[in-house]
Image (cartoon, rainbow, N blue to C red; front, side, top):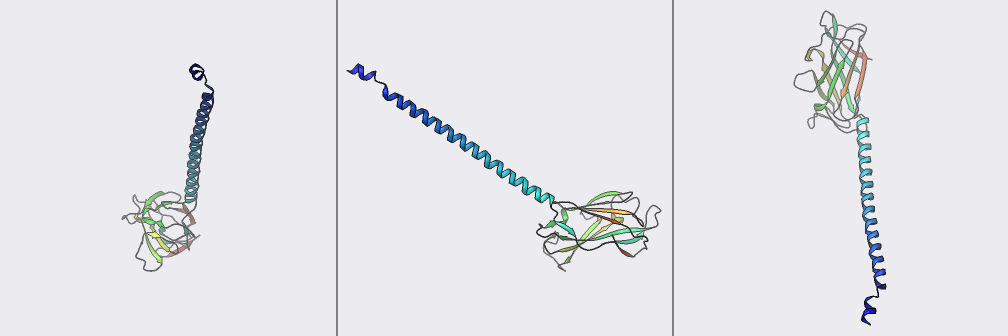
Length: 201
């Protein structure tokens, strides 16, 4: 009787099947968790890439008004030339504040090319026009602000070999710390008189 009872292994078949089933369920659950985690991670990274791309592609600054040059004594035998470039910048609609202290200006003309970061050298300076008398966050172009940026071509170090003369094309690129570069291309007036200001187009 005891021998028959010991040889009766019908119950073990069901137990083994249950163990195998549980193993399959556990493996499937772990695999599903890993796949879902990878999917969520990929989706999050995709969103970050899209947001970063939009931030980098969209410009946070725009030109507000005319570009004005001031006539002065030329260099290198060029006679009367433009020695100062004045432009007005504002924040684009929905744009983030732009830190002018971290902004870089690039100037180029027919013969010259230079890149100027904001520093105490005096090659370029800025001041708030709107709101007048702004004191808080003076270095930030915030929504609704308008800033005057003055590029002094004679204070660039190393000095330019020649200043832009009449009918010469110039290009100023404003590179904020984030966002697209604002490119401004203008042509000098047909005649330049020292001490006179000219809007250029």
